[in-house]
Image (tube, rainbow, N blue to C red):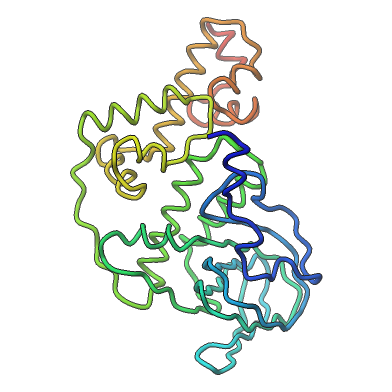
Length: 297
């Protein structure tokens, strides 16, 4: 999918509650322009405020990067206050008006999630209804939000498969641990058929230099994105992102051995965002750098 097409349908400010458009918010970085269709991420400094916002079509998850700070919000027609420490989360479901007061300055990461991803994570177990939360703790949610913020910080457009994996895991955790009703566990997956696995791998290899959303891989196998991710891991022992990253690394190693392409060009040809991205992955996986690998022959 080209960048212009992805940008046209990406989630953006118009899909949020409206907090981020207020003068007391000073954005540092956002996912705008990365083409993310189902999640919008923004990191910012917020000053104290009290305001009411109309219902939004997206679920709002706020991770507190600092604190503690006192937050008041209306839940079930009554105002509740909570002193929230760093790492605490604020969860507001889609389709509900938000009345909130922040009583101190705070650095936050806002994550807005489309309802379709949440419902897909639930599978066949019925509609997911998230609960309103004020200052709860979830270490997995915290790490997933920080990982998505890290992708925004590095501006890596090629990381679409990784982002889709993070978003799918985040949605599954919200459905499992933050829903208002019990969620049925999915039955164990038997994995992809050999034809489905071949189709997915061929698409990865054909599109190795491009951003590749999980939804496109799933479409090639006739599955939903969540079904595909589960069954792909059952078949390969790796997530789609991990598998694609290994293919890209293997391709880069072949080109380093057999060509004299500049490393920056080679990295882009193999689907890495830039030379530093390839170097970081190669050092983590192989304990070496592209230049040293090429010299070793």
